[in-house]
Image 1 (tube, rainbow, N blue to C red):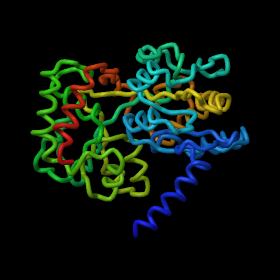
Image 2 (cartoon, rainbow, N blue to C red):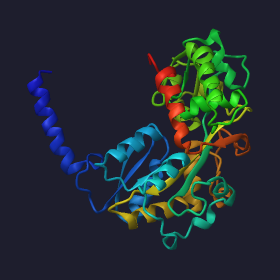
Image 3 (tube, rainbow, N blue to C red):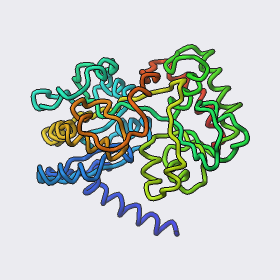
Length: 352
């Protein structure tokens, strides 16, 4: 495309953004709720029920990492109402005064949330600014037709015989957290020597066998047979292989017994939301037991957050709540985040 045409197209898109798109800072429809959520995380059927009951439209943009979500919101120009950050970023956003307070008087279903999850949500245990959406963890999916023998361990990424058939997430805290856990350290360590050891394990043992670090298309690549072993989220993998019965039978998903990073993703109302009332209605709607059961059944989750939904769940879970007992929630690292950034961006991600 010639530069003049590109300029004209960019101008047109800019104008459209100003008046139509929530992510561009334009005007928002008073009858539309704007969500910024992860892919494979909001069932269409649940959205349709909410829209029908309240006579509104729900607009969803998708995010692939906490870092990109945070950067986009910090840069301004977004009109999202509800975001779904993980605990460490929820804590940061609370400290930065980026979230509206939750008006718990508007929410009748908070009583359904497991107190044990709130105890782990040390960043906001009384739900002043956030309401837990889901408590889970990434794991490993293996195509057993191609990899019949394997150890259920993060060490699988050190197997040179699987070179160029494996991916890990493009996520600093997940990958370094896995390495730290494998080495016997905390996923939240601030010890420079331990972080250095984790960096070296990834660089010298795991990275040489990976096709890439990928947080967006790993599940699709797995479903297409390009990758045989992927670190990622069960819901993404099983969504992509839903129509491939043989691959579903050949797939094993597990959270390694060593443990690893866990997450509590929460529903948070952004400061300045133009639809605070509707946002509270959506949060309360999600935690109706029958709606939450529909959510977890859609993606094969255990009902880790909503207690009454456990009795209503009908389908299988790709892992169990017990599997999560070995995991550790990612905390805000404070100034130690710089050490992780240096290990990840200045070393591991160099050349990727």
